[in-house]
Every structure is written in C-alpha cells, then in structure tokens.
Length: 264
Image 1 (cartoon, rainbow, N blue to C red):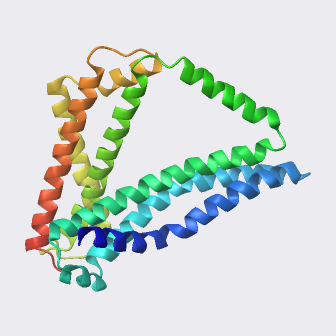
Image 2: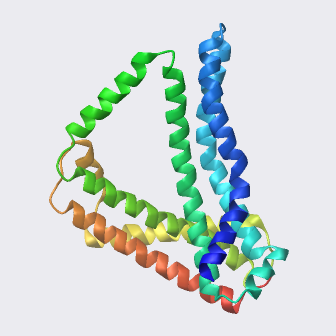
Image 3: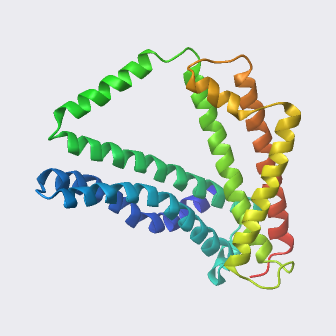
C-alpha cells in the first residue's frame, strides 16, 4: 500500500512542477537561438538573462512547490482522505518525505540538463565551445586525485540526508501549526517555526561538531587543493550518521504529533 501511496503522491506533486519543467526545456532551446539569430545585442542579452533566471528561479519554485504539496496532501480541508487510507501515519509521512526529496532531486537534475541543452544548442553555431568544454572535463577526470570520486559520492549521500532533514523540519512546522499548541493557523507561523527549528538544529550541529572536532571547512579545503587528508572519509561518515539521527528524531516527533494532536 505504501508504494501505491507514493505513486499517487508523485502524480499529485508532478502537476506543480510540469509547467516549470516545460519552461526550462523550451527556454533552453529558444534562448541560444535568439542569441545567434538576433542582430540586436539587447535581445541576445535578455535571452541569456532569462535562462539564467529560469534556472535560479527553479530553486525558489522547488521550495514553493514543496510547501504547496505538503500543505495540500497533509493539512488542507481535503487531506482528510489521506488519513482514511489503510496505511499508518508513519507510512503517510514517509511517502510525503520520499516524494518531496525526489522532486527536489529531479528538478536539480533537469536544471543541469537545461544548462547542458542550452550549451549544446548554442554550440551549433560555436563548434569550438563543445570542444573546449569536453577537453576541460577530460582534463579534470584524468587528473582526478585518488579517492576524490569517493569523497564526492559521500558528500552526495550527505546532501540527500540533509535534504530529508530540511523537508522534515518543514513538515514538523506545518504539524505544530495544525495542533492545539498553536491557536492561529497561518503560513507566517509556519515560516517562523521553520526558521526557529532550523536555527535550533544548526546550534546543536555546531555544538556537536565542536565536541567531535569535525570541521567541514577541512573537507572543502582538501577538495579545493585536490588532496585527500587522513580521516576525511570518517568525518563525512560521522556527519552523515549524525544527520540521520537528527532526521530520525524529527520523523518520530512529527509522527507522534500527527497521530495524537493533529487538528484540521
């Protein structure tokens, strides 16, 4: 039943993103055409700015769509239908978490794909552009220090875990606003709670990392210098486990509140 719920949530969420994805692809194709065909530098400049803003704006749209999806599927007047399904509250919460993270990742991939498509179409008139980019990529991968790829994959896993924390904080904020603990139901309170909880977690992160003597700047410095320092894998691993514990705690707290104090 969980898989069916995830599938249904995907269909519901995709409607929020469909227009954004279409715009990203269309402008990735049309913008370089305008740049190359236009005799006016102003039109070409505007086309370039539009594709940049479209990609950057996708970040804002992801946040807005995530909020809309969570509110609609868990806390709107029609969301009660979700609670009549033969699934536990934990499964309902897990479905929303999986779908939200998946759509964020999918949008990020499509944003990169849009930039790649923009570059490819533009290179049809500038053949040396692709050759230059390809040679640079080959140089980077050929000269990639031993172990750096593994570090990159570990950081990617950490990014996914931190995404789950971000989404769970958002769901927890909505949950608290829709309980008897908060009298007035308002998106402003959701935003304030989100900022407050995020700040509290960041303070705890700082304290814990200081105790464990884990400094992410060491990792970034190592990556920038192309060297892998001893203990870097352990540092990322411990940080990932810690973030998983934070996400787990947020999940349990939110699940408890949804089961016992939800008011919609």
